[in-house]
Image (tube, rainbow, N blue to C red; front, side, top):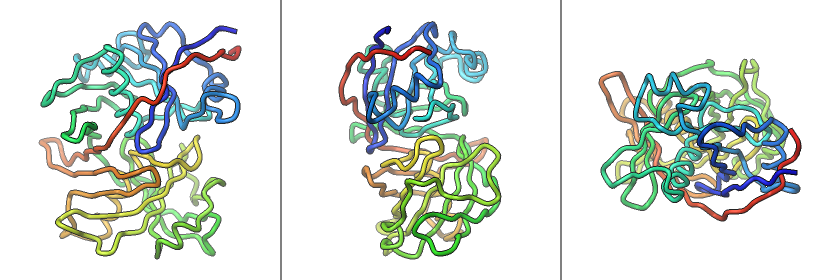
Length: 295
């Protein structure tokens, strides 16, 4: 078997296997990705990211047409090997990997554009040592489906939100109800989203707003990965949903508490419409090499 070198990274407990393939010469099969992400027989992760130069990625031409300076493409896959459009925590981990590997530079105050299947995402450093990602525009999508899960006596209404990938956000009545959910089985969404969806269960904090910042607790079942300790795009969707439900006086800055830590979400106006940004930590955990299964 061929050995592959990797780096393990995490961002508020959302963990990733990162591999460097600048020339796009070593694509991985669905089975190989799933094997690397397997927590018993592989490295173990919620997803896998290949670092590929946009000029050598099949979706690179659209990336470079949008932003010629977007040298790097985040080729992201869920733990089961399925393709994902976007990962907010993954972008921060990806940028940390590029910087510490010497593949990119990002000075304070500068912006690093990153190619993704959901378009180019601009990343900046934060004063706390983490990164802020401009996630771009968002939209309501998928209506208000009913969502069932182990631990809920009856299905609850959700809110469909697209932030580059699909989400359904469900409000619960208490922290106890949130804590008692069993999110090992995939939540049941009806009608079934055509491309699946991440499902976030949330409880607003009490008080909802403190010092001008909205606060919410969240757990998530990620499409293709199962329950994870954090989901960046899910945190964005959760904050957007609670603001939507709270009405016009709700704040545009939110703290989202996930099992793996705390992330910040901020909505702001641009010439093309409202954007939303995600900020939080990201760190590299260890490097290694592992035998790569046959494709």
